[in-house]
Image (cartoon, rainbow, N blue to C red; front, top):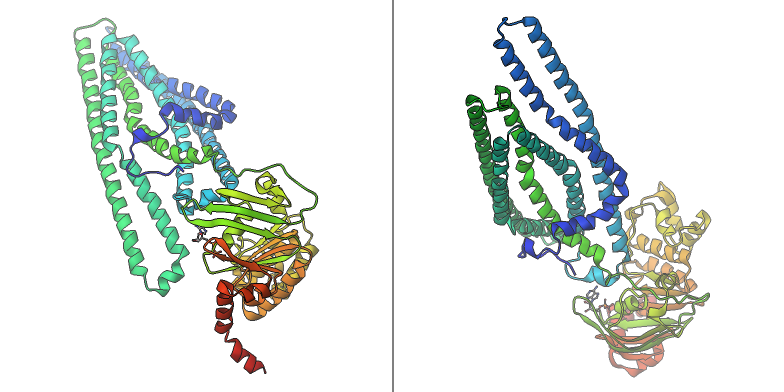
Length: 610
Ligand code: ADP
């Protein structure tokens, strides 16, 4: 799994700059026409950037000539010259404004579109992953989210840097340099000589910053993750009065982050100062050289050329001053691209599917010598063998952590076993078309996630094409219809406002709507009150008819209602049989059963009711 390692450096990045651009190319290519227009505008903008230097050169020389005219100074000629200069400069500025606007807006359009495409691609990919991906270390929701956000942001920034920032500046720099050389080779050489100095300084800056950016990123990720944890556990934090402890944890991370950010800023400001200084040295050298050439009357050198070269030199040095920022951004992109493309390239975690489909799924499950270990290393299932007959209700009983939910996870193909054999209706599970298999299985968990949205939308999740009447009927079957109708907005009310028990019944209604032949109930009544439990029990009894049901429950009432029981102990079958048989066998089941009866105070209940 790709995770960002704080201690690693740039060099360990899988991507070089060329590699990065190659990966980005397919995302930019759909916008190739936009790109062509942007590049043409870029070129036009670069040409215009040189106009000031040319105009000032000519103007200064013309004014100089006027001052030294033998027939005396003529105000009329001077006014004409100034009018032409103003018209050219203002006209150019107007045109440049239009060109720059077009170039930016098209460049930005490319960036925004690329950003959307990158996000869509990564979401598509994440939705394809098997559950093992999400249980793996480093793929916690907060961390994944940071990885994606940062990746999309820095990659689309690379596109912007390249097409909106670097390209115009560099084209303009190259043009300015060419003009300088054309006017005077020596001045051109001085301007050219300054460039390597900049590169050396930028490279030194890069070396000094090495590792810091990754550290900053790592801390940022941890911070996000920490805040997410606080939000998710706010009730627990408050009930244990652990606000201070949590605040302290955050404070430490924040302080680390502050120190790291300051350090990176300090280094970059230092180098920026150095570069500005070198740039000034360059300008001073150009002024001295051009003034000298004018003074010795070098052919072609006039006073106007001093201005000309100074202005052109500022066009040469402008992009180079930006070099470090672009270099930083590119390094960011190299770091984040690793995490981002790590997700896109992760073929290994994409859910696999077989081809097998059938008209009628019966629901005969067979597990033989199954071993399973979670990605984190928990060996949850050991040498498990069991038969789950079609059309019957099988209960999985065992202490917490015995592996009951894991079996459901395996049967739903959320995870694949390490070894052993699992089959449905005689066909190995891996040969089943995964989508088809899940279409035929209804899953009700202890805590079903209700999506933000209306009650209607939430029930409809079970069958998006259901009619309104079918949605209502499903709600009736799940004994939630009357309560929904009492809400001010009825079926349009926000489902997240419902109580835990009500949400559970929404989830059951969803399953009624889906109407699958196989049903897994993982402690479906664990969060319900007694009345709701009884109502749910009635509706579950109704839906059980003719279906294969696996029920995981701590509720003795539900367990003894099953046709067959498997008792699990640390990932393998400890006992099995009909409810009566298993009880007679004694052992773990009897222990659990008796403890359960005692905890319910069954004797006193019987006395009370007598
Ligand atoms: P039960 O349903 O019987 O309470 P589970 O099947 O949920 O037990 O868990 C069996 C074992 O697997 C436990 O030790 C549990 O900590 C571990 N486990 C469950 N889910 C995961 C997961 N997503 N990642 C890693 N370990 C897990």
